[in-house]
Amino acid sequence: MEYVTRETRTLPVVAAGPAEMPHPILGWGETFDHDITWTAHSHPWHELLWNERGASTAVVGSRVWTVTSALGLWMPAGTLHSGSAVAGTRCRAGFFGYDTTTSISATPVGVEITPLLRLLLERLADAELPAASRALTEAMVLDVLTPSPRELLLRMPTSGLLRPIAETVRDDPSDPRTLADWAARLGVSVRTISRAFNAETGTSFARWVAAARAQHAVGLLAQGRALEAVAEEVGYRSASAFGAAFRRTTGLTPGAFRTR
Image 1 (cartoon, rainbow, N blue to C red):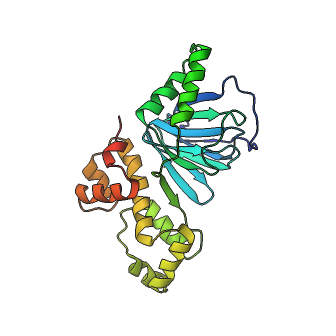
Image 2 (cartoon, rainbow, N blue to C red):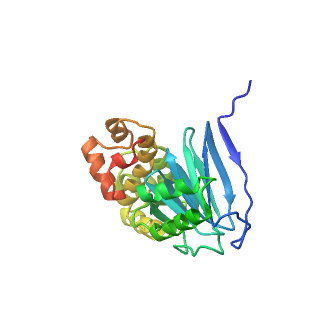
Image 3 (cartoon, one colour):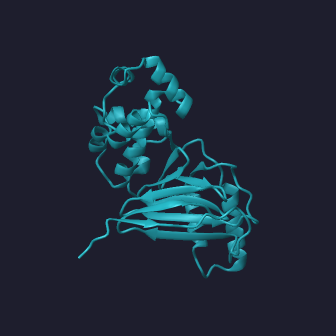
């Protein structure tokens, strides 16, 4: 008997524009029994991605976002993106009509999933909700839906020089090598790597590594892993050091991403 360990879903590429929808905001949710990947696709409507449980990934070009129960992602209509989620994740999404909703951002942007926003979105999932109540709830969703300065975003370098570093850190966030270590291994100067990281990712090597570690940690925290174990797996000597670095990177404590 063959067991499926990962499912790949192919979705169409559709330009932004009006689409037939029974309501201005539609909800979707699915729990995955195995790992899943979505190939590059786009929607005619705007999309709000978040998770009821677990963590997933959304990719636009060289930018990689981690989506959780605390931090969602707004995807404007027509944005080409791919994604993935691990087994056990409960993914949620809200689809917002292109002709009924003005996008909160011209580009993908993080959205904090507050308790109020969560309750409003869940209320819209009620198929028996009266039309007047639905219209009021939709208006409240649009009123509280705003971009957040907090987002779990990693810009991936693409050059041949930096790609080995990025792949190593993403595969093993506990890798202890410093900028000087990598410079020696690659036969270039520290300044060369430092300038390349800033040019390709918009941040320093140290901050990029911290962001990569935070993204990896979120997935482990969402699985309910112990704080000490997560800290060790992503390269910190103690839970307190991990907590401080995580908060500097995300603006939130590790506890915000623990399984609810």
